[in-house]
Length: 172
Image 1 (spheres, helix red, strand yellow):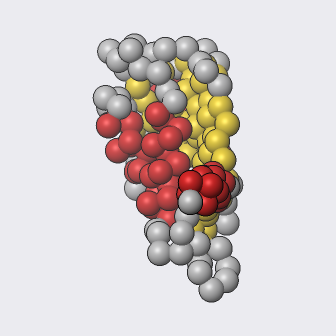
Image 2 (cartoon, helix red, strand yellow):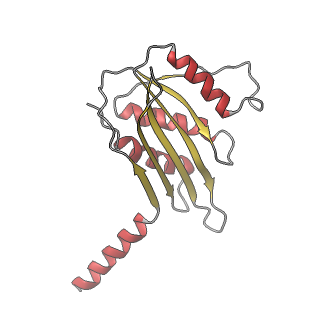
């Protein structure tokens, strides 16, 4: 009976671990009193506005860690179809360098979709990085991907990925 329970536990752990992948580095510790800015997430996925969606979730996850970043202001006058994420990122980076931040959080969305098939599982792939606001040097980076269960939402899967990624960020 113990062998059966042990095998069941091992199989369960294997199945659960196969649904998520994370990689990153052990970067420096960041002071809790630092000033932070949040740059736009560049969207490499096929889903429109996945970057903006992930930014909103990232904002709440950072808040849970005690980081209250200032966000690049939304520009109402620009046509969203013309403005690509790289241009928006470059504009935000110029804005942030004039704000006197200590650190900037940025990243990208590699995948944001429901998989095809009967179950329609959510699949999310995200990368994050922390930049020195003065030099632009990458001080910390981490990426993760997750395929959720069939009744899970994309936002829920993204929040789990972001919680894991930000959980590796060391704040003193």
